Amino acid sequence: MIPAIQSNEIEREIFQRELNSFVPDKALDAHAHMWAGIPNQKNGSGLSPWIEKDMTVTLFHDLMEDLIPGRTIGGLLLALPMSIHGMPTTTPDSVTFQAEHIAHQAESDSTCKSTMFVSPKLNPDFIRQEVKRLNIGGLKCYHTESDRNPTTDSDIPEFLPEEFVRIADEFGLTVTLHMVKPRAIADPSNQHWVRTYCKKYPNMKLILAHAARCFNPVWAIEGIASLKGLPNVYFDTAAIGEVGSCEAIIEHLGHDRLLWGTDFPLTHWRGRYVAYGNNHCWTGPEDAHDDKQDLYVFHGLEQLRVVKQAAWHQRLSDSQVEDVFFNNLASLLGMAY
Image 1 (spheres, one colour):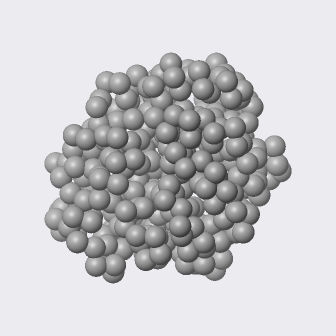
Image 2: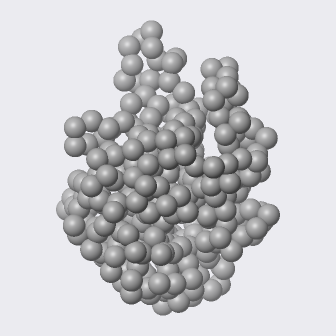
């Protein structure tokens, strides 16, 4: 996956024809990544061309203006796992370095809130201290911090210990969780831990990234209903390429649990995630025949199409669409602009 910087004529035409009348005037991105650059880091993730430089809210606004012109866009600024930065070990110093940068970005822009990355390798007292010192709005965890091999088989507490959820409950923070296991929210262990954490810590606001990681809508159709009755669980739409996952959330839990999210800067990769069998994969220009490579468009546009299709199929009103794009997350974060 190779990032592009500016939209092309095809992408601008798609936005004007399909999406301009759909996307509200203001929006909050529930899943926008931010980082402080680290020179000479080559991580093989596709972020390598960008990871050495600071990702700032100024660049975020510039790129989103190109993708979704004429809108006021803010959001929840998510820290990246240290492994993405090419660091073999998460340390207090490395977490603080990133958290300070993200907090500074949020302080400079009233449309944004900051998060910090958390790992089982960190002392809960350190996390509590940094949350207070930097006025952090949320926590972000990731499975690569688990000791299990492979980490993609990890139970949630192996990379999101209960002590960290207790801190989120204490401060009323969001927790953005990218769950794993082959069937995501259709897995009984994931269902158990989401229900346990949400019931035990009602002041914690759990955001299940990537529609509870349902890149394959079958998992959402099978698993989303297990989360009924939890008033503090939400879902972002980041990187989702299949409409069925968003529809299952709206159908079973209501549109007020759905948060527009992009996985920025994945917005500016050309391609999309597609479901097949009991799995999913990324497809982009590198997978196409020579005469088809130029037909792929920004994933940010593909993902907006998914949200529009879900809204259409579920017959959401204009005001409910505004909830998905802005009001739901604004309420969670205590924001208004």
